[in-house]
Length: 293
Image 1: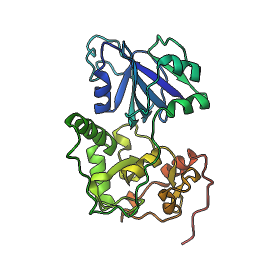
Image 2: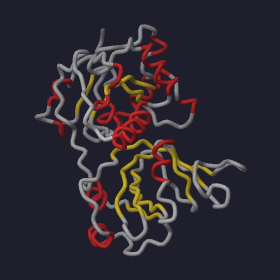
Image 3: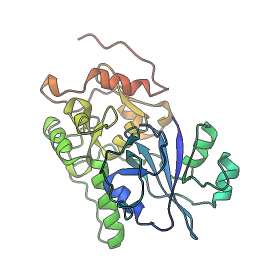
């Protein structure tokens, strides 16, 4: 996989908010962003700063004739390619000067193309470490009586959170179909709090044709994040498997557990080939034969 750092023009700082709202980005240059690549957004200008970490969910494709994005300059700028993404974090732990980034990663010291990339694992790890995305220690006894009080949040924080939640939950029709199929329960934990359940694609989202129930799992938000980061997967015999990297965390209690919720219809259960493809992207996972029933 490739890690990209993409600069947003100082003239259009609003484009970051629009990108988050729509879950996509259009590029002025034909860069080959691929599904699974990490894309970090950086604001250019007098007050340069790191904005967010996203993960591409589709390969970059050429824009069709007349196809326009939600950008302020969409009518005049020669946008060429588009990819969609899933937000990993918009809360960097720190935002260093670009000079420090260049010295630490080997990336160009003065990016002029608007987007630079690296495949160096140490550089990728350095950039990722700018964000605090360690899995939260959540009590697995989480139940329907748990309440989250938001009264003290500022209004702009609430609006940003709502946009992020909407993006993470996935397309409404796809999520609704998974809610019905999984009886409003997280496939991995059994949590039945609908507000924290999200539509997870097993194979990357590549358009509406991938929004089908066998290519989806209904997952609690934190479990969805672990699944997307390939720290958690599902075995051939439909058991939760957790990466050894999470040893000592409450998530290890899920390891080897059968899925807590499954669609009654075999035709709606997770597709074996999609699950296998996901497991292949988990370097820590050793394939095991399915259990005999």
